[in-house]
Image (tube, rainbow, N blue to C red; front, side):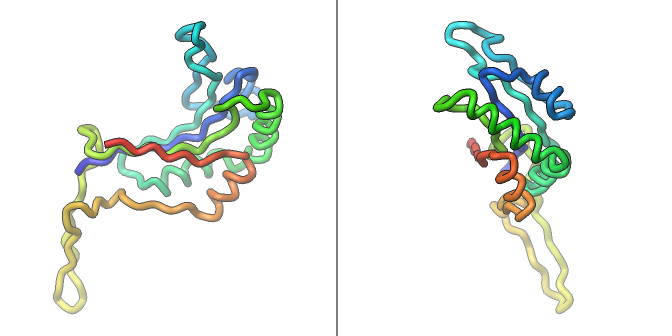
Length: 162
């Protein structure tokens, strides 16, 4: 099995542009989208977005989340304040706010190949990782990531395909 996975932190707003988010936080994003830049009716994308992305193919989900939190934790309080303002400015609007997103594609042609390993044991035996035990499967949330979610008012969203 081949697995491709990445993560990103995004801020979405109907009123605050990505350039305004960048100016307010002092952090350059890796990706942005402009509300309605592809079509005005219906507006696509539906919101302005500002994203920080972790995409290295050999990383676990936990490593991707750590990369994002390491990069953004100095700004977590400011992000949380901004997200509160965005949500208050658009009450009841679905999709505005912040998200920590995990995306995983199973059996993806561009994904990381499963490693089948044999490890020698001190007693002379061997342990073998069997097919289906991909080294990138499984993940966890550390207390630091959970704190970051709380401070930034972010939801955790997981998309899995395949």
